[in-house]
Image 1 (spheres, rainbow, N blue to C red):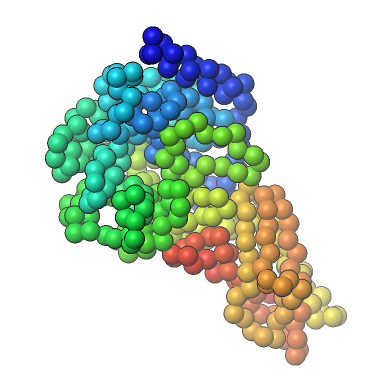
Image 2: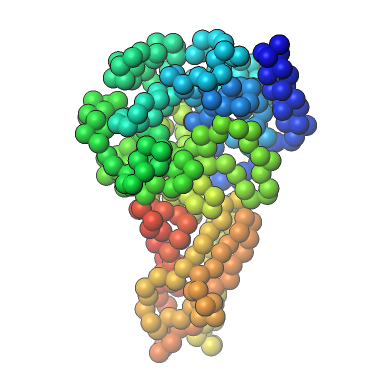
Length: 362
């Protein structure tokens, strides 16, 4: 009876999702790559989540995502008495819904251990049952043997690292043996230490929702934390290749976090920037039009003092919302005819807690 009630509850939770249309999050592509919106860390009732696996597909469809991975805990299944089945069962149930919805479903599991090593996800695996081993190193090597892509989950999670986010000797061992390829820079909060490690050690930058309960109907402009994957095509194989080549960024609230070469192109492809100079009164107007659903927070950077701009804003910062336009009025003083308008895109983090610099030339 308990199993029937649980199943009926999951069905009822899913009913509103079928009535929802598909959202569209407009984020520009990069040259030679499509930008895919992905969440590689989610749970269902087959571990410690509270929704049926197929609901995760409906949520992803509703929110405009392209790919997800339902990564059930191998070692932690508190609902197993009511929801039995193999470690592969969640993926099997979600597969048909993914096919119907056009969502790319990637097979994955979460290895759930104390620190060190902490929790690690293995995605692009073929058989989750083979990861159910007492020794962590045996488990993660089994995932690697299946061609899995391996990443460290929520390294700054205060339940495991309450005081300081540390890189342990065991993580060095995993990294040097090719058993850690990525790291979550955002899972709930942003982990600047993980961002630094990703850049220093050339780990793939990841950001995921780690959803356990039902995800909300996000208001316009809101979204779950996701990994942006710059893939050659919208296929599992292309996503796998992009992850191994570290072509990713994180989209978290208004923030985009990643390597500067990708964030700069994303910025430039999202905006149209035009300059109109008026030599009769020594002024110029920069018009920035946002063609995307991203938000940009711009702040004045160090610049030639003969150029004055952002003078009337007490914070010296402006926001360009989705599909918005910003006009920057510039005064050219002391007879200069041009120069560099230096900006910081505060919410495009290219280093830990450091925004991306950008220059508009007059």
